[in-house]
Amino acid sequence: MLYSSQGSSKDRNTPCAGAAEGHGTHTASTIAGTSIVGANFYGLAKGTARGGVPSARIAMYKVCTEFGCSSMDILAGFDDAIDDGVDLISISLGGGAGPDYFSDPIAIGTFHATQKDIHSLFCWE
Image (cartoon, rainbow, N blue to C red; front, top):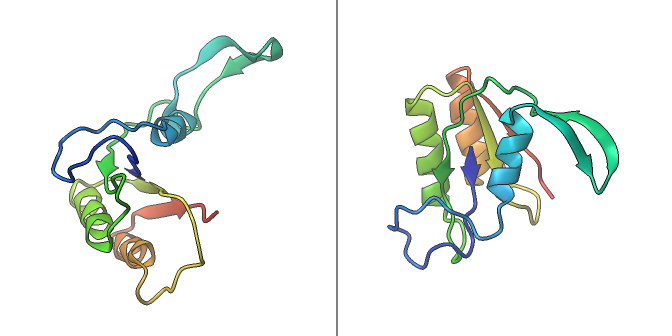
């Protein structure tokens, strides 16, 4: 999972994987959260909640800081995930204008992952 850690570090070299806003944690639980019996939202929608694939193992790669997401760091995250042999890459970085598929690091990284039979998913806001 490539994710943003905006606000967690002032130094790109800080090994902290934490994120001030928690979006990556939320996304990870949506993908691989274990079953929680009796889950509800303020008493509504009571039941059992779980992620899409509770047996999944997650590898996370920090590619952004509060200063933004550089193309070099995004592509390095893709390279690390591909080298680690992941089965799926979920990119959780935000949005903006639509991608230019010939220069956008997410489009390029996804293409490289697909060449290794690794699927990627990304939601553009």
